[in-house]
Length: 477
Image (cartoon, rainbow, N blue to C red):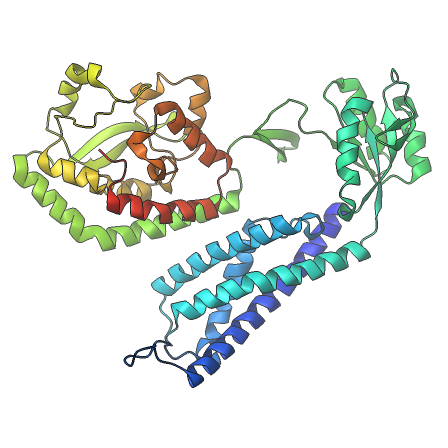
């Protein structure tokens, strides 16, 4: 019942958001048109500051803007259950979604230029205004939904100590649409209330309690239940059509998220500590391909010049191909512009005692194996550009933990292995946090921080933060 109500409210919210986004776009276009009629020039005489923008010339963009905005809002979980999102979280999610949608819109306009010119300042103004209008509309819709939605009686099962925190959480959020009708405790406990909520009986009395109190959903808390008890509760709920939910933290996992799937008729409860949103990961891959293709086109001349200078310096091969560990440890050939002498790997053994990086990684600030052109392309990160081809091949992503050497992986501690659970990338938190100035353990922790908090918005933020790091050469060697 709750899922059906949430889904219904979610689709209604999508319709309302689509109307709000379209109206906001047209209103901002109208205001922009009127502003230019009054004042179109910069403070000093010269070329017009505001390019021509009219409602008529921009109307066709509505058909691109609305789907992109709805897609981004969906990916940020804004239609899961509109009644249960706090205002501060709601505003943050909407702002993050609009940033992603704005970035996607710019990509679409670059790939498919519109017949009528538009203005980036106009699109930016619309994006900022849409954050406010979407937030206001959602607040009104959520308030209306909470008033109209029925309050469901729920029953909490568990010992007093374990059930109390859950009861307290539900009581603190009445807008979730739940009313705690009571608590059912194990046979061994003798209490009359849990966090102010009355105890309705012992576990053996569960069927009578469900019938008597008009229970819509049962929540089972705690971690010490045996399979016989779990089956008894599940069967009693199933036979009368009451939803049965249980504490997904019974394994004590601090990062992994639970998900229920059907595997050939088997109900499988899966716990994953890596991103598992298929749609969002598909978008990530699409963005990778688009940006990689654009990167090859835009940076082609730079790459050709780099190859020429490398060849002229010592006549050796232009590319350095090295086996690296990718997703789940699968190896692949990673491409780089050669920045060291041809026999650099053979000379590495003699330099082992001069390693300046802790852990299994080898780093030297003044590595004597680096060539003159190599020092420059390393400082500007040009040596990494051939990895764009690895991105197109699907072995790497634009954003992700840097791919390690198999020999380094063999020396990882067990907690560090989790950084291989996401596809490696050209840039990540480590790259924008000082690179070689960050010690190995913190480097690993930064990669795990990326995996644990991954979102499309985080990828976009890291891409934007990478540009100044590359231009200044900060942390490179």
